[in-house]
Image (cartoon, rainbow, N blue to C red; front, side, top):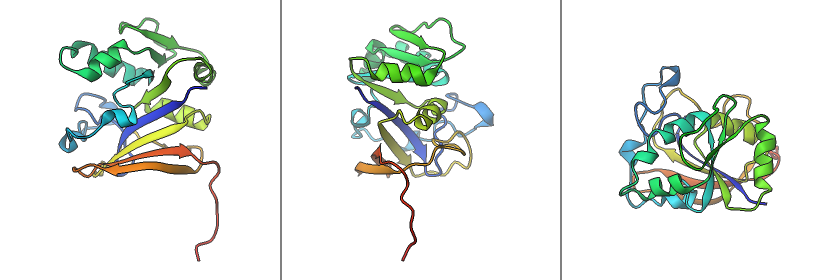
Length: 202
């Protein structure tokens, strides 16, 4: 069975909304879009966490798909990530989209959990989930995510869409890799580790 890998940028207080630019996702009157810009590091390996989509099929929520579809198809000349994204199969979780203009895209309608579980059982590349906060919540609750790549930036945003919202299913994670960029971004890879083990300190 192929893996489902979730990769996201977050602030120190867990906000994942609009790291890429002011107009990316202003929902909820979010005014701090583009907060990841000041920490860009050319030496950072996006492929290590699947952010470039290399050798993966993309799984995207509707909002993230619309953001990506409005940008990546138009930046292919000298951008390797754009070429990879455009060539990759893209599975879009949406109950409202009927037609998709970005090539190699298909809609996962109906029961999203069942649709993703079925995708995982098919042959092919691993599945890469990027951003897509609402979809992460749903798939985390269903225990379908096999790996979490979380890059935490040294900023506090104070509000916005969070990686794990209130009511997220409790569970333990095991850190399997970590690295710190020159700009102070903490890049961690986790895998699920079952139930939380409770006890008393001391």
